[in-house]
Length: 124
Image 1 (cartoon, rainbow, N blue to C red):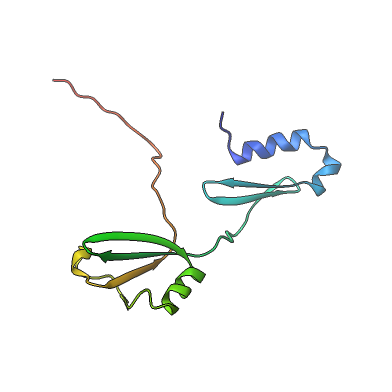
Image 2: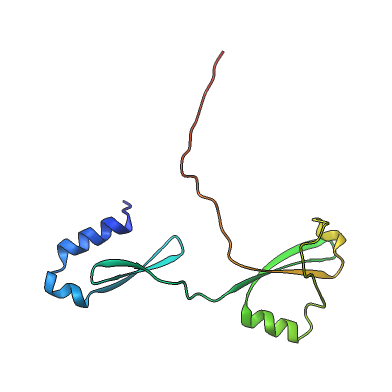
């Protein structure tokens, strides 16, 4: 069974006595987003997860992608792990031509989710 966050709030509002609602506090993670139910009202919380950096590099013909935190990236840079850091996207998408260059991207992974799926058949 799956329900929306809004439906969950409505159920909780019915179950929690009105006098106790002021003290109610529940955290919910949904689709990598944190929500907090405070006084039975939904409030989106800023994601306080650590920043993620993706290190893309080629070594001996093998491309690797590694996700690291800001602290790990700074430590690796100070240790000389990455000598030639690219400052823009390379014109050559094939990492075999990058040599020892490294591409660092800050962000988060996203995966598209189908909102509507249509199957259409045609028989002649």
